[in-house]
Image (cartoon, rainbow, N blue to C red; front, top):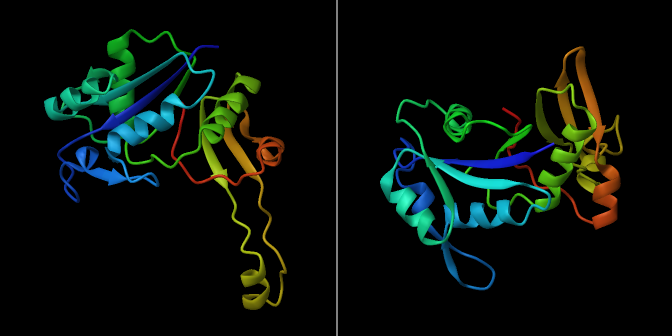
Length: 190
């Protein structure tokens, strides 16, 4: 099954115009734009056939092409990132079985989290949409605040809407294998 990560990015945000081009300093002190950091996160995902940035803004296009990203121009009429991803996929001519919508402001999404999402979709070909879900374990805080429950379960799982209803593909094995916890990151199959 072929897969693509599409990173929707728009300049004209009402809450933070130009957000994709804002530079953030990483742990190494190096400033990189938010869209660049999201691109780097997407490029770290193994087993993906293609990664593209979808935008309606020439400033974002020029910047992204400057660091080597493939860019697909979309219309300004897209109301959200999902519509932008769908339009970009149509512009590219489709041809991908799995489409991951990795928001342009999600640079902290670990590669293994997206890899597990894709693996879950490959394991359930009937699934049409998937959203990664993480239940957080509050640990000692949960015990202090609650008299009825001592812990909150912490499975990292992928819930998928399949033709017959909800199905769950657990990725706790992958999480244990890597010894890390998931950071929430939006991703879906269009």
